[in-house]
Image (cartoon, rainbow, N blue to C red; front, side, top):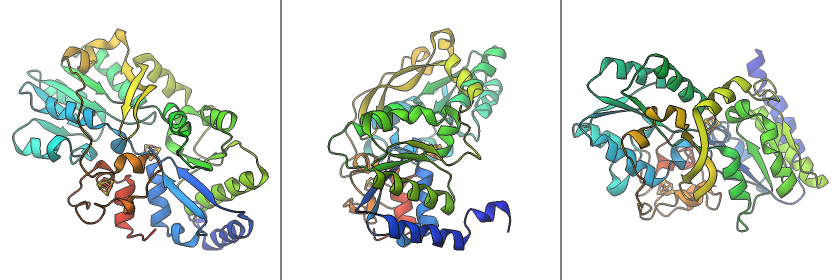
Length: 363
Ligand code: SF4
Ligand code: SF4
């Protein structure tokens, strides 16, 4: 058995499951902040093996899903400009904006939209197209922001004046603080995102224990990781304890990644940001720092956010706040499917609605 196989070893999983069944006292409502945990829980079948009293709620952990409808409208508007090439990761192509329009449709109508696999490809695109302004759509959390920051540094070194980034980057801790302060949210504990924490370090969540008395665990994505974390949460809850525990030490150093943080902090400054379903959260986004504003698409191209009504009937906002499981949305599996998504949670591979649909859960 390889080291990796051990993280899904059926015997170890069974014994952890037995412990959870035996020790769980009452109900455990936990939020998995990261979209990839949601997918792992379904793919491994854990949701059907856990006690019914373990209730898992999705959180705001998919960068595509939390991109606000006004931000989608902004980049769709940008794509309609003749002098602009929009460079984006593929997962934004099908996210519906106003009137159900998306980047794929804009591209089919002649907009210059290029799917890139890395923001560095967008720099190459700018070098190859000196006649156009290449705008990279910067979405994602602390996981992706350092790479985008490094890309801006690279463009600065290359002296490029036609490469810009529209920053919709978002920060996880301020969003969690805003969510946990919501008196309607019923969460007992949290499973924290592994990748984000590998950058910011687990101590960034200490406020969850100190201010909200919520146990939380940073964990990996294999079944054993998740089960170990759930058992830890059950034990903390039973004992009335609240601590932030790092159970993913093989990937998440205690101090995070200071180098990545330093690049991010050089290029970006914190700013208020709009989150789908949550609204404006102070200090939860990243704007390009004044010293690099020539790379800031919002400033250089005069982009403004406009009010856009939420998608009719779509409950993504409630799903992202842990208030609704996707299959309780009236459109789920009927008007809204991965082939014809109404909202972003059905588009993204990390989206909760897509995970529920793919694994056909009755939960
Ligand atoms: S970027 Fe990483 S931590 Fe964030 S949602 Fe995706 S998988 Fe989870
Ligand atoms: S099922 Fe579709 S419409 Fe409903 S919340 Fe999910 S993405 Fe939105």
